[in-house]
Image (cartoon, rainbow, N blue to C red; front, side, top):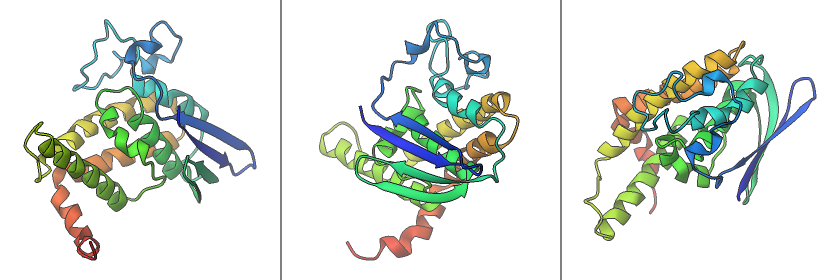
Length: 228
């Protein structure tokens, strides 16, 4: 078990705390037979690229992971602000931010560390979680992680390295499909827009990377060329 804690102080001075075990069980069938919202059922708005079978898996694991948070902030507008502390094993972070950005960070952590067969490919980002990461920071971490994996694949003789990162763009195409479907689910759980806009950010990021990661990496070249 390894816990990352989000601790919020909301505008009305109330506090809310949520812990994510990034090493929790990864069996998508673990939720079978439990009582969860109908919008969390696997067959409800199932992703077109989902490899899970509704006959074997009753609920979408990403929807279940997000359900408690989505329901808690169902009536919260995106522009509402809060103080948030994020406590990891190595350090703590603080930020005063709008709920859209806070929920984006928390949803990202939950989805990457869960049992969705597609989103769980982002597990390395959960291991080195960076709260409130910008687009540039996200791409830097994602591309860096991907290229390290390609190096290891080649060194261990598993496969030829994909230095052009075509596989990374394909992954983001897969992620976009999942994010769009999850956003549709969250619409059923929300009256205000904090949950929905948080997920919309993931859709936008995946669309940008899908269209061309080279353009984003090019913007980082000035920094990347320094040192090393």
